[in-house]
Length: 352
Image (tube, rainbow, N blue to C red):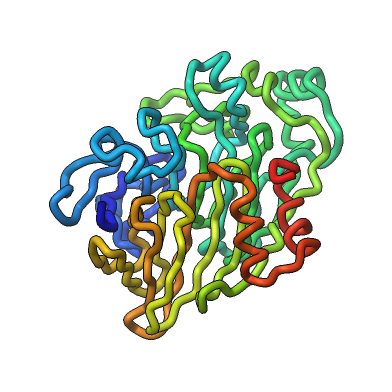
């Protein structure tokens, strides 16, 4: 159970562009619009060492808790990380929560997600919730008469911004945005409006108006970019971005001195940013190229990280088993309880 380099899955989509191939080194034809690169996903293959060619799902079955820690190894790996290139607007959409996904779709997870903005053209915006209180009845009426856009709330985005989107949030990524997404392992998406586009088959893409009506949060939204929390632990500079009941996402800043990051019993998905990063455990060493991903098995206990060039950054994502573990981590780093509470309060009361 050494550090695993992951082969991503590129997904052609009508709203995608060429940045994932040209700028981020993903495979594919730059003439084909690639919308998503699934970086850490249950069906992705390992590309290094003796386990090369096997999927994360196969490794779950073979290694169980050595790979996933206290997570049930018989269930799909609970996280999906992506790079997304929105050359055009994505559909206006919403995702269900776990209860609805299990009851209606017979799937284990709904979809809460978060976005780390890697690049955005000047003036780029996302749709994030409603601009005033509404209701199921008004939503359905406005979908029918074509005036739903009057209720959409547009929020400006900038590189480095982080947005948290719990299940039930109305949202859409606007054109000219490239981002890193961490989400629950679900592809359940209920489209509400698709800008009158035609799909590859020349027909409008399917909408899911009634199911969306079941799961939408109809309250006025005031959400904006997350206020991150910076701390240092074991000499490693870390920026907490999102701490939800489903996942923790951070940005880790590195220099040329190897420093330890404790896994706290959980697997860790990592994406290198602009510069290569070296990850070492007792079982092996890997170098992660810019905008490539790896999965550190829970069995490693800790991983030693550094940037061979002297400066580098990682985005990390870990599933959550113990909601209190993150609070204990911040306390160990000397973060005051009220500061921790203020940060966590952005993501609901799951930690209380």
